[in-house]
Figure 1 (cartoon, rainbow, N blue to C red):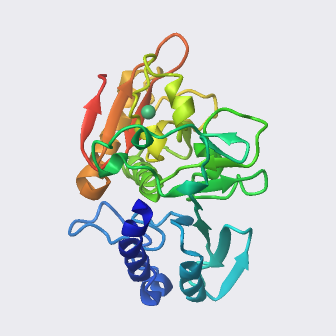
Figure 2 (figure 1 turned 30 degrees about the horizontal axis):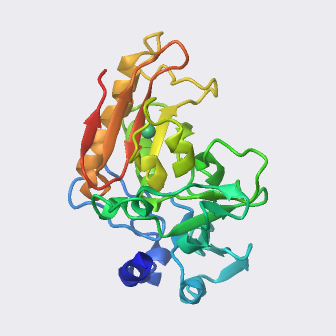
Length: 302
Ligand SMILES: [Zn+2]
């Protein structure tokens, strides 16, 4: 199974990230992209210093234990989640175990319908298109768990099967980290970005499939949990805000958002990915697509 191959480097990386000295001193936690010099290091709280959840591929329950022990206070929230508290900052971090990919049977985990991933049908075009390692189980009880300072698990759920619980989610930490870094960058540019709305995060393959030919790509990154369609929406009206304060919401505001993404990719080349521009139409305002596929991709225009 491909998760086994990926497990060792992932665990080594986490062991390094969670080095107690870095956690205790908060090093890298307030990564300031304005400072010149080398890219700020990744930490247990991510490059942005704002991640509040980390995901572990199975089999790993025995692996969370030593990490959890580095923190003074820990609490078992559910079978899949251990919450630990960083003594230096007082922040709570959720260590979430993924349900194995193999638990999906006939396209379903429990009653929740996910469908078949592209690599279950044909050879993946690259490693980025292999099946995900597993799924985050989302229940009515844990759906509001913060994954970072501005996002929670429920922000990324597929928009279907409203009454089916638990739901299952594919989400990559690198995406959440990138979205937080975009907010940092916007604020650094004097843009009042306090709330970012995820219009669409994870799309299960069966949900994505229904939109193929109507604007959704067959191999859409949304199926891999590393893509989000976003806009800054401080006032909660479900439309992009007037970021440049010129009295109208249009492509110029979208451009501000897109330029922040470009800047984050220059500062963090490891977070490179897709940037898609979507102008307003009669049904909705402008928004952008962001992903961390590992290769630069651009589409759409201002
Ligand atoms: Zn998208």
